[in-house]
Image 1 (cartoon, helix red, strand yellow):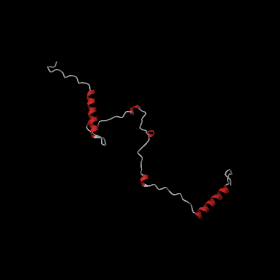
Image 2: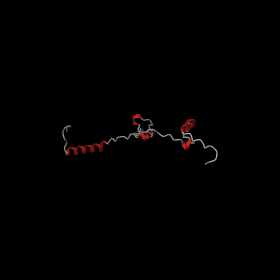
Image 3: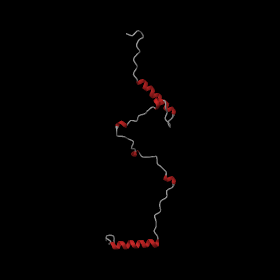
Image 4: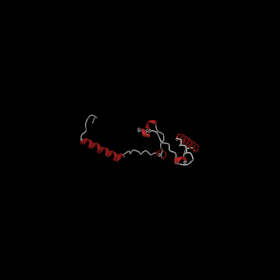
Amino acid sequence: SQKGEVKSKEELDKEKELEQIRNTYLGVKKKKKKVMKISEKFRFSFDWGAEEDTSADLNPLYEKKHEALLLFGRGLRAGIDRREQLQKRDEVLTNRQRELPMPPPPPPPGPRP
């Protein structure tokens, strides 16, 4: 049989039969399953490339993240330096007070009309 030649059904059946006989007497070489070490199995890579970043949003509404003050400036976030948080909170509150319009002066004391 050559490569270009198409084999008949009888030839294919004969080859399968010979293969089965060979496997019966010589044994079949089973492919060994690759055993992974436990450390490799549970290893997770926390690094990714900049091209894989999917956090960029096309909607302009979500481009700028909102920095919320916790409990109107009384709370602190875990995992961030306390001094930095307190400093930032003080800056935000003083800037907010500067931006507020001045309240109108109180009415002069005296009899009301």
